[in-house]
Length: 393
Image 1 (cartoon, rainbow, N blue to C red):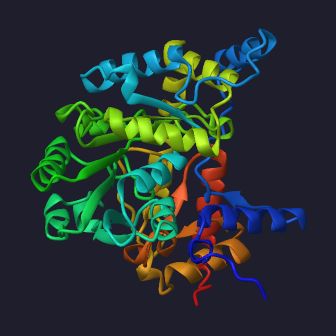
Image 2 (image 1 turned 90 degrees about the vertical axis):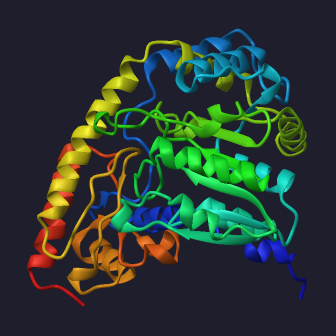
């Protein structure tokens, strides 16, 4: 019998899509499910963005383009970075990618040798660990603690640095907890990377999704302006409700971007030009739809957090960004795997066990509030009714 490669056996994928497949099967059987499992905005992509893509197609922009991306969107990314992060990168520091997810893989393949170490948050976005294992790199986990509101502690990072550490990955606002690191914490992480002469990858996919009570978004990329060690990853999926468009952007040192661009060229050729035109409109066009979505997300967050804290055995911190909550469910008497299983099968509520995001996620579950207020209220009702009914394992 023929075998697969070692790397193939190390691929784990993303648990949220596995759960979604299960939910879709249940819905085909006629079961009504409230969706909290996947980070896909329920809003439609804003009309002006869709129209920009359609116009581009009708204008004949349906062929190959530069692997690095259209010059127009790379300039737009520079403008947006200058406005939001206080520095203006060179166009040669910008690469347009097929979604932000793939940037994690590009970074690992271009920066880290097999056997070297990468520091990641635990719990954290599952792609980090899956890509690390695929590349035969060693993950080093930094626990995110509930008592610190799940913010990554620079001291915890420092004590895990070794002579094999090649890269630190930070994610703020964070998936799965919604935590937002303070500017002081982020600066200290940069200083650690600078002191130890290692790369720092800042996953800022939720940078536009910071709530007023957290004041503002801050990026450590302004410390070296992505010229030496900082790599800034971002995308259009979340804030612009463009998950299906698969459009991302990475800013970093020119040599790193050049090699990432060659890897993109090797694997994907380029990003479709009409998709990039949509991205330009997202950046340069009206931001009213984005503001309206964020206002709605904030209302949903407050409803969900208040509702969860009213359920017996559930305790939930109010997150400062993204569109996730990460409640502690240990007092329900169930572990997170059983909690998620019974909520889906018995209560018709789909959410993810915290252990899907790392060992330190045990005892927690993740809910995404990219669904209507009505669905949130109904989901809370079902959860509370199930737990108050004594249906505990």
